[in-house]
Image 1 (tube, one colour):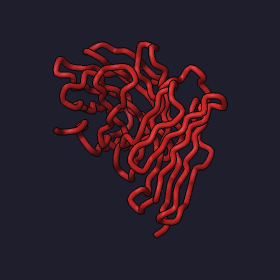
Image 2 (cartoon, rainbow over the protein chains, first blue to last red):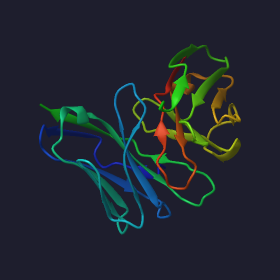
Image 3 (cartoon, rainbow over the protein chains, first blue to last red):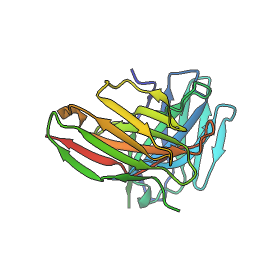
Image 4 (tube, rainbow over the protein chains, first blue to last red):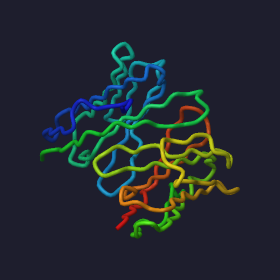
Length: 114
Length: 113
């Protein structure tokens, strides 16, 4: 089965609210994680990444939290805007494995209600 | 600077045919990876090349092959196309260090009829 999965396939939020997208991973050897945003007809766009030696990382309006104990990753989007509507994927990688292979989950579709 | 560029953007092929997809990485990036994204799912890893050598291969049949050229551009080849090969094929480039983000191109939409 897939190593990375998402709890919620769809998420609808009101414009201006905060969004939280969750992701579970099963490979305890994974030590690098990325969140991507994919709009219709486009390739995935890098949002934020985090290494396993960190619990939290913040970007512009986004925060990624990593809980290695329960193998859980989340993406928080502050003050969600209509332009945030897209499918969000988490991806994981194992460093030192000789190759760079991202394992993606199925994705969560975020819909922002104006 | 140009991002990752892929060509063609769209392609329609018949079952049994062969297809070649092309990718130019971000200038200075030496690592190129290929992913297949079936509608409604996340991308699946096919190949990774670094400095013209294959560094990783996903769970795909031998009909899939790839190569990387001295200028770090790459081609993905698929032989004996099946209907199930219809997907968005994505190319990603990285600078080459461990654990740095991968930047994706817009993809090639392949439809096999």
